[in-house]
Image 1 (cartoon, rainbow, N blue to C red):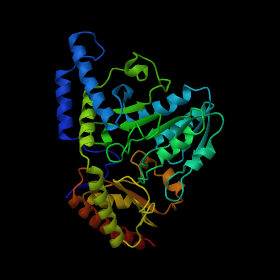
Image 2: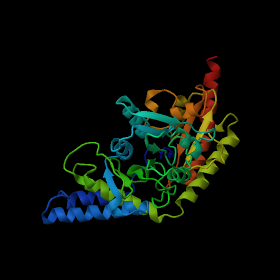
Image 3: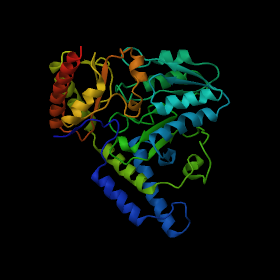
Image 4: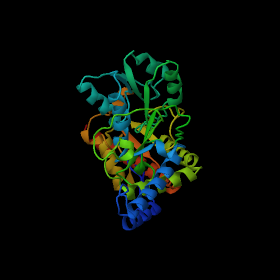
Length: 382
């Protein structure tokens, strides 16, 4: 059987998402900015999609900006805030997704100063550590809600409360791409000034993301153009993708038991793995606050890539850390931050709310077989 456990990289689109997108492409091909009737009809469809995506974050539709991806939403929220300020120092968590981390590095290349906040051994940063990194000239702080490799829930509300005690405005950006849909992301209570999300992480289409921006906060657009999306993200909107995002967001919003259902399966998978494989250990303590869908498993002295191939041969699809960083064949920043030895293989198994119990059973059994196979191969070469 097939066990797809790489949902943190991308989820399969729901059939109703595909159907809605196809219908939109056929029925609403006009530009939403056009003044004629067909354009107005397209604009109404876009407005409905915006309402649906906003509801996922319990936000107002006018606070949502559609982007071309979660990466772009992160860049707009983080770099846009930095470039709109006269202060030129930013603070980022050391285990941020590359969408934020590399944006900070790019700012540094053109004159900004930046500070990194390292996590503790449990993979979480503290509000105290973030506050200690601030300077009088700090303009933006970025801390992700859920780490995409190890699944740790970062204490975003606590950090937001600490920032508010300063008596000055520091823009607080949150990457919630791995959180929206399974971990609670409430724009009203999270304390962020901007929040980035992506459709294809919650059974929507690739190629569209969204940024929530708190009323009254300013961003500099990343580029100019026709002034769409509140003049923050120019370019004709991908109406079909927005509709697909809206449908996916609505299904995620209404499936209120998804998080607990997914957590139960994730825990069952981990129980079986640690019972069957003596050398396996979790990347962070299992009682750490984590999102319900990510299991990060370390296998000391076993290389990850052969394990992934052995798993694929058994119909199990997982990843080595984050899919967007594995092609470099270097240890990820997250594993380095946790002081994981380079000889340790790190595998990420990520579920979705559609994952079935039989997939978990098959994957745990396949991993035990794969480890035995690679252990024999390693032993034979010594």
